[in-house]
Image (cartoon, rainbow over all chains, first blue to last red; front, top):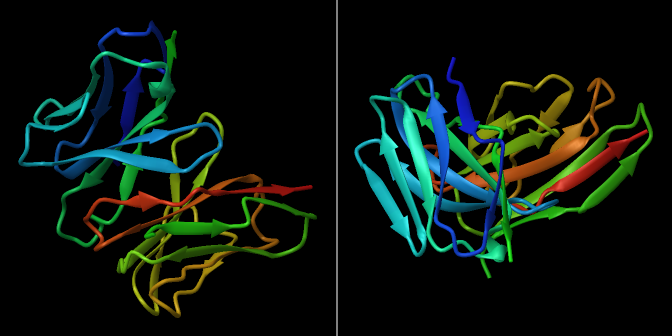
Length: 116
Length: 112
C-alpha cells in the first residue's frame, strides 16, 4: 500500500527566504506526482505535475524535483512571499497497468506561513 | 470560463437524512472523482468515474452513492448509513484517469 509522508508538518519563514518542502513515498513504481496548494477552506490548486520519466518541473518561482528510486520529491519555492502562505500537498499516482492508476494517494500536507 | 463548480458551499443536515452534493465541470473531462478531507488526514477517495454510466468505489465508499448520467455531472449522495458524515467534500476531474487532476472549491457538510 502506497504511503505518502510530508515533512515538516508546518514551516514558518520570513519573507524573501528560499525554502524546500519534502515529500516521500513508499512505492517507487509511480506514474506521476502532483503538487497542490490549498488555502484555508478552499479547494486544491494544482501547481506542478511531474511524470515518472522526468527529474524536475518548473513554474515561475516553483521548482519540483523527483527522485523515483529513493521515493522522494521536493518543492522548492524561491523568494517566498506572504501570498505563498497555504498548505502544500503532495500526491502520488501509482504506475501499475492493472487499472488503478486513476488513484492519487495524498500526504497530509505542509502548512507554510511566510511572515512579512 | 472553464472549471469545476460545487454547490452548496456549506450544507447542514440532521442525522438520519440523506443529502446530495453537486459537482459540475465544463472542462470536457472524462474522469471525475469525489474525495473527503478531515482535519489532520490526507484526502481520501470516495468514488471515481472514468466515463458516463460507470463508476468505481474508492477507499471509503461505505455510506455513499454516486451517479454519472452526464459527462459534466457527478453528484454524491451521503446516506444515513455513513457513520461520520461531517467533513469537507472535494470533487475533482481529469481529462483521462492518469492525467492531472483539477479540483472544485469544496462543500463543507455538517450533520448534527
